Length: 224
Image (cartoon, rainbow, N blue to C red; front, side, top):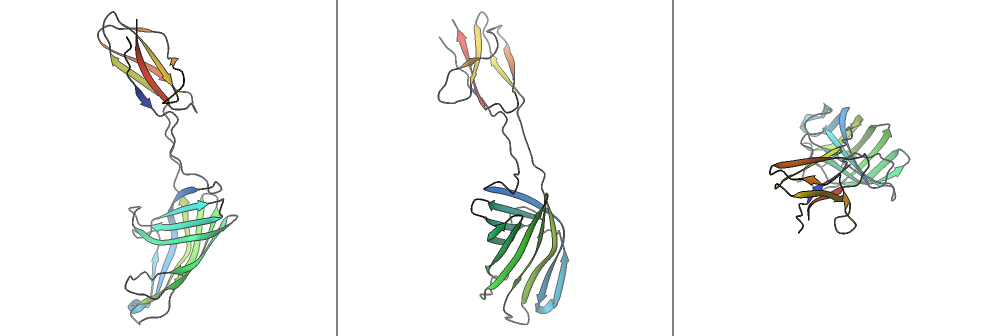
């Protein structure tokens, strides 16, 4: 007779913000300084210092294999998009975005041109560029620019399981063996320590996980 109790533990699982020079990476930056300027309309010229609630984070998606990148300026909630640039050309540490773009005011149908240069310097991004539109009306801004914007990569987060505790309710005069394997569907089971004698109470044993070890699936068998 065998009693199976299966427990799943992800060992060495890591959530990390990766470096720009690896393919297919997504990097989050936080804006630390810069200026956003809007020209035209009833304000004439309006200048705002960054960061502000509308422009707080920058999400960079880069495909190093295709030498293309997408950049999104996000609000403080990290969900609302302030500006999205796509299909930028990657050359060494520089990304050039030059594309047709829609006006920030949704009712304006005339398209404009976005021209931005993004430079990587260590863990920082330096951004400058503008969106330029035809003058539609004296009340509508036509020029939107980012100047001397600096954004710093959000620190990488690494989470690693270093120890797993396996517990089960035992019966007196029964002997149990804890086993593990890394593949969920195949492969042999490895004994974790010696057999454990039940005492009618909750029994626990621990497994110290070496760094870099694969994930493990645990089971408990009842020995004859």
